[in-house]
Each structure stands twice: as C-alpha cells, then as structure tokens.
Image (cartoon, rainbow, N blue to C red):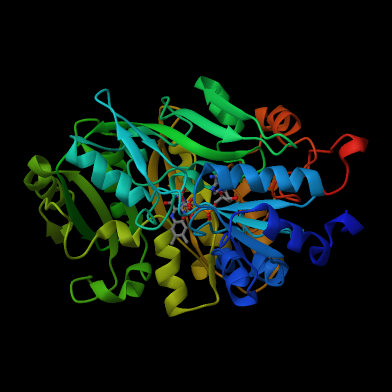
Length: 461
Ligand SMILES: Cc1cc2nc3c(=O)[nH]c(=O)nc-3n(C[C@H](O)[C@H](O)[C@H](O)COP(=O)(O)OP(=O)(O)OC[C@H]3O[C@@H](n4cnc5c(N)ncnc54)[C@H](O)[C@@H]3O)c2cc1C
C-alpha cells in the first residue's frame, strides 16, 4: 500500500528528531543510502528490484531506550521501521521497501556474559567474531557462525541467517536449542518487552526483523576445540565429493567445516593461488588439531593430496580457509566476474550424485558445484551454494525449476520476501507473532506477504 499523508517524511522527520535524544537521527543522504543497503547485489534480480529502495532517515540507537523510543514513535505516527545489524545479509533483508526509519542497532554491541553452563548473553549488535573471541577465553566457542562472522551481528544472524561454519556438527540455528532466549520489543504505542524461550524463539528466528526488534539474545555455546585447517585436492570433483561426504558423515572426525569446490571455483581465490593446484577439485576442512595427521593420511589413501595445512593457532593468523567458504565463495567468484550469481540448494543425501549429474547435463558449466555439508534436524545434508554464470532471469528460473523437479530443495536467494525465501511454513509461528508484536505491520513492511493488518491498523503493510 502506498504512503498515506501521515507517512510523509517532511511531516514526521522533525517530530522524530524532537522525540529522540540528540545525535541519534541521521538524515544525510549518503549515510542513509549506505545504511539502507546490504549485499543484495549478489542477485542480479534483487539488484534490479532494490537498487532505488532506501529509508527516509536512519536512527543509530545507542541503548535499548533509543530502540523503544523509535518503536513508540513509529506506532504513533504510522512510520515503517527496518532494523539493521551489520548489513551483511545477501538478499536485501534489511533494505526498506516502504521507506521510513532505518533503525541501526549496531552500537548495542556488548557481550553481556558468558555463563558457566556455556551460553553467551549478547546485545543485538554484538559482532559474532567478538562473541567467539570472548567465549574462547572462557573455554567455549560458537556452535555455528556465518563466514561473515567478523562483521555480522548476533541479531542479524538470528533474524537473517541460518547456519554456517560449525553446522556440520551442531546443526543450524533452529536446531538443538542453540538459541536459548530472545528479548524483543514490540512495535506498539507502548512497546512491550517479550521474552521468547524454547520453541517460541522460532517467532523471531529468520523473521527478517518483521516480528519485533531483538534487544538481547542468549545463545548456547560448545566446549572449545583447537581447530586445524586443511585443504585437500583431487583430480576429479566426484572423488573430492566422495571424500568430503565420508568425512562429513563419520562422527569419528571432530570437525567444524566440510566444503567441496568444483574447478574452476578455486582459481578465483586469488590470495591462495600460490598453492591451489591448477585444474583440480578442492575440499576445505577444519578438524581437531590432534586429527590433522590422520586426515592427511586418509586423504592420500583416497587418492588426494594435501595442498595446504595450518595447525591450530590462537589467535588465528594467516590464511583462514573459512574466508573462502559458505557465501564468501560467491564473493570471490563475483570479484573475478561480476556477472556471477548463485543458488542455495539442498541435495538429497542418497541422490546427490545423480542430482548433480542431471544439473551438469542440462546446464554444463553455467552451474558450478560448491558444496557445504551441514547437519539439519540431525541429518547430514549435502547443502550447496552453487555458482551460477548468469545470463537471463528466465535461464536462472530454469535452473531453479529443474533443481526442484529433480528433488533439490531451493532457498531462493533472488526473492525478497519471507514466503519466497524457502524457509517459510504456512502455519508459521511468525504470522502469529506478527499479529501480536507488530499489529500495524510497520516492521520491515513488504517482507512478510502473508500478514494483513486488521483494517484499523492498515496504514503501511
Ligand atoms: C560474503 C557473505 C557470506 C555469508 N555467509 C553466510 C553464512 O555462512 N551463513 C549465513 O547464515 N549467512 C551468511 N551470509 C549472510 C549474512 O552475512 C549473515 O546471515 C549475517 O549473520 C547477517 O548479520 P548482519 O548483522 O549483517 O544482519 P543484517 O544484514 O543487518 O540483517 C539481517 C536481517 O536481520 C534483521 N535484524 C537485524 N538485527 C535485528 C534485530 N536486532 N532484531 C530483529 N531483526 C534484526 C534485519 O532487519 C534483516 O532483515 C553471508 C553474507 C555474505 C555477504
């Protein structure tokens, strides 16, 4: 629905400045533009759809009172609010579709506690890299984190991400009680504080900030491990995949990362070219330090070569293989060829080879295999972020349709609403949460299509 007069920035902006403490509102165009954007340009489809979208103003909150004041103001004046952590989301989750206030919570960045029973209590803007470093000092580590962990925030990961490094052992965010507790504020004339625990955390997980603003999160940690890094190469991708799959499925290996790349993807890892073997498939692994030699021996036995190994170091120094995995792989590929894009695919464990063959027969080198093994609902899954040489949107859709027709799940990264993104369930707790915590539909409007505010509230969504 288009703006109604009460949404005109020229009317509400001066009021916003008066109702907040000095220095909180950012109205300078360049800064509002910067804060309104994330890595949406990973997708040529979203790049076209979202490039002109921006907030009308940004607020840089310094504490929870600032967040509460923004939400109160927005409810009273009917102004949309889109929350931003670090802005590393890659499908435009924090790009405001209907203008309004861009609420930057990046400065609420403290790790409040690492508890003796292995949880971290964090403000929403706490960087995952900081949480990891703080936890390790106390003998713990993150269960899973995105490859953007140095920049990405806890709130942004919970609301916008899914899993990453560590997910091969500990599952994704929604698994195993990893997210213990979320404190969020509602968007109402008097914002309420709601505490979500147990399965109720699903009301806010992967909700793209549409069901409330997280102001604190408690996440479960794992006992820390001394991780070593290994890159192994194989002349052919199928042998590399076999090896990676065996490591992924064997609980005897203590591991944090199992990634496999088809050639020429490794050729795009420019800083690593001095040791990347030309023309070969490559697997990147993180295993416990004490298993480093055994993994080398297993590689040779499988017909592979250890191309790189780095024993455990704290703090980590030098090449970090994880900086080339998960969605960083796409970034390196895009640096080499900006037209490249990607998919997010879930292969069937028992059919992965046949499914890959089918995709390669139909699309050849237009699609290149980048596998990320992970555990989801307790099952080891050959996940993938395949690299796609983009030509047209119709051709991209053909790849998606073909994937679906052969049983490959797609979490579509070229769609900018929750329902299309692949993790939506029709009876979703998020719809209920939306009605309770954001009845006017002012939080990140346009991202949850299924929610219709009651007529008395229908001024934005
Ligand atoms: C190179 C690259 C690699 C990546 N790798 C991974 C990966 O391995 N795994 C993965 O899951 N993702 C990955 N991502 C996506 C993204 O980096 C992560 O999900 C990251 O955790 C997002 O955090 P952020 O602070 O940048 O969130 P933002 O981009 O700022 O926000 C993400 C979403 O969360 C909402 N949000 C932010 N803060 C709050 C809050 N306090 N309350 C409510 N809603 C909030 C925003 O409105 C938005 O909808 C990758 C992206 C890139 C560009």
